Image (tube, rainbow, N blue to C red; front, top):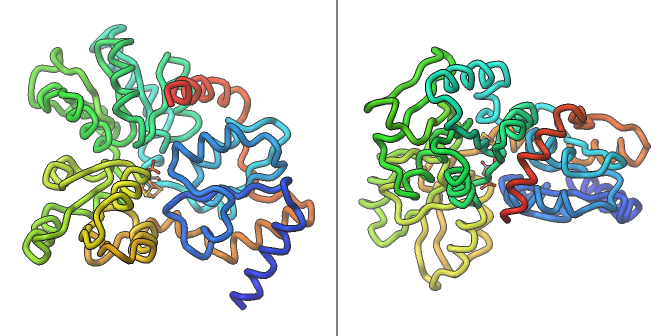
Length: 347
Ligand code: 13P
Ligand code: SF4
């Protein structure tokens, strides 16, 4: 049955030609990635979506916020389809627009007009819209440092949402000391801060990626003990403690490029999503690549897009039935586009 499904996908792709475009995130399953027209990380997929003006149907193999971003950046004539509507992102779900507006009000009272928001691309379109309208921008793990540097040229303080770890790791990289960081707990609606709030330079939203949270200090210690010759590389969605103990940290794209460029025979323990780690193991046979967490860490929502869902979405498109279309209302897309364009202009 798998072969039959693969044959059908190929047939539809061939029949639709340039009218169909399938972007696929690196965390997608192999059974899906084999059919992607472009494979990339969040930044690359945002860029290809912005450039691809020909395709009438963009069948997005990734998660909901990525499909929303693609809809915002593509033309009105293009339809973005998510093969499974349950493919969300638990990190993006950790900040909703009501909480953000309430938190922002408290921050304005506390810090006045000295603060600018930055949102990780892993957030809802409504939050991107809010951030865009406040003069802020989106960031991805590939350009977080550059974007944070830019934000500090605009205002004295930055609100970084919704991933506290990417925010903390990037701020730390830029030399912002931990005492100058506060966490905004949007559930209790209060700051968590060790020092004086007046000295705070960056306010981190209390959100995290449930996949990257599975890589722990204990995992690092085990690898150091059992594989003393291995290098540890992790995604900056991992905690500060794990990033500090690792040999290297960077976005999905950075991890792939670093492993690719390493000497044959190098051992790598990788702290990121399972499908990507498995693909790297298979791809770089001259190196030894394994997961930093021996139980492997899968993103359940990314995995909801599988071959049957992809085929189903393609068949609906083939039959002219538009199901699972992701549309962002123009009212929200407008501000979100401002936030995305500020990022895309900076590469
Ligand atoms: P990047 O693709 O930007 O590295 O982000 C990782 C991620 O968690 C995507 O959901
Ligand atoms: Fe969201 Fe984390 Fe899954 Fe990426 S890996 S889609 S951030 S839950």
